[in-house]
Length: 195
Image (cartoon, rainbow, N blue to C red; front, top):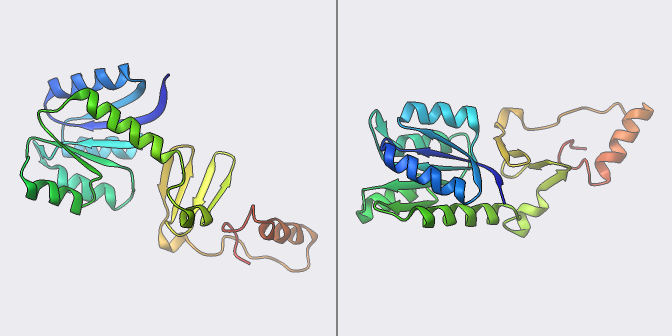
């Protein structure tokens, strides 16, 4: 069964990238993208909007930690560090700056694939009651006001604070605006328009 999610692998070791990509594709993850530098990682992240990032720490033009910080400034996409750095302090730093998992080299590519698939399974369901209450769903769209996040299928978009607030003002006298207010109060439109 092919999975529609996108994975970005960032590592400068071609053999590791090739092996991991092969295993992911065999496990049904068809949309696998790669980058070998910090700069290329950021560009690929912006262009591809992956669902998970596998990120090496030591890159030729910078550190994966910095790439993680940059991604975290715009997205909550899961980030798995994949690194030869196996000291406890390296792992703690990875988690502290926003990593969701930390895998040390050498590693089992199949295990990495199953960690990714497990994460995908968990993201298919709301994580808790609070987030469910703050999430508006309509067709393939989801809007979570509390997290300031908009999703279309599996693509996540982070909303900026200056864009939050009333999306439309209502004219109390018009029939069409009466219908809009009715739509908002019905619950389907709640969260998109504030009344």
